[in-house]
Amino acid sequence: MRYAPPGLCVNDFALLRDDDGTYTVLHLQGPWTAEFDHLRMETSYGRATSTDLVRWKPEGTAFGNGLPGRFDQQAVWTMHPIPYGDGMAMFYTGVSGLTPGGWPLQSVGLAHSGRTDGTGWRRHGTGPVVEADARWYRTGERMGWRDPFVVRDDESDGWVMVVCAADASLPVEAGGCVAWATSDDLEHWTVRPPLISPGDVDELECPVLERLDDGSWLLLGSIGATGGFEAWTAPRLRGPWTRRGPLGPTGSYAPRVIAAPDGSRVVLHTTPRRVDLTDSGARCRGMLAQPKSLVVTDGSVPRLQWWPGLDAWLGEETQEPVLHAVGDIGVSGRVEITLRTGDDGPALVVGCDGKNLWAEGPAGVPLGETVLTEPATTLRVLTIGEYVEVYADDVFVLTTLCYSGRPAPWTARAEGRTRTIPVRPVLLPDPDRDDASAVWPGPMPS
Image (cartoon, rainbow, N blue to C red):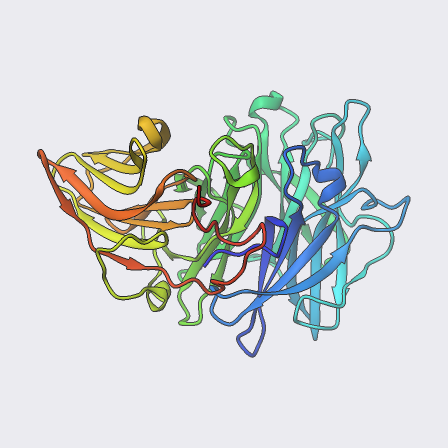
């Protein structure tokens, strides 16, 4: 249901689907530590496989740093593999070192494989294939040139790459943008002016392009390190692009789109955890979260909904205490739902009052909040270990973390009355894992 390799955290990732239906995830990986250094600890890609996008099997390391002196000697970051010939071509971020001010020097490289399972990569040459162009993008301190994503051009027989970059015409704190480049052969690229430059974000990371059924385009991009991700749509790759607002709430990050086994579009993303698995621990890179259905209808704002493929992983309804569970609650006014309790009262509460939705920890400590576009009539709450998701009228709107309390029967308090909420237990794919990257099993016995 959530995945990280044993003992490690997951950061940005890419998804592949082989001809036999097997899914492969390639992901950045690093250890659990409060002093995480992505220049020294994100030096390889992990790999895992799945047949259903829920149960993932670790398959070891698939790619690593380049040789000393090369553009990718320091770190390898976000990647995007695409089918090419009988195998794959993979564009990836290489870090050569640091600027005098300590900023990572980034560029995009290319690797090839004769296989389609995410293994067997060999670098194309010893240098990058595309670098930031100083006419439009920062190239030294506070530069950005990472997270490549490549698709077929919709106006030629060539290719288009989008890249996370820094708009040189804007202040650093507002210069996050999506750069783009074009190529006829995947090896020689022409850098273009920014494709999207909102002017109000510091970084617009992990851009994703998806061509929709009507031929138009959807672009997803993470807003900074913690701002969730937003959506843009356009009739053509070259625009004009229309900003559609948040698609994934704060805490969700690095979205990727892929066809589910039933053929529908789903989005997978990462979610953070906390060092030492306590509420006071520093946030760190986390885990791959379960899929959400991607819904895009003509003229409407894209949205993420509950994916029906998860229903097979839910047990029969119960009113007993359950740590991993899904519950549905009707809303007709202010309601507060207690999911876990502690020695002094509720330890995890989700509340809703019209358009206002929030989550609280022990003693009412705020964990997260959002304002809905319309008052909610139903809520679906999912908790897997410390991880909490809330869907309002089937739309994914809130996620947070809470390591406090112990399982209790879910109760909803509204209009001065309290009732018990039946829940469906979540059947974990790997319930016996006990390493640091397994799903949090609840508080240790005292």
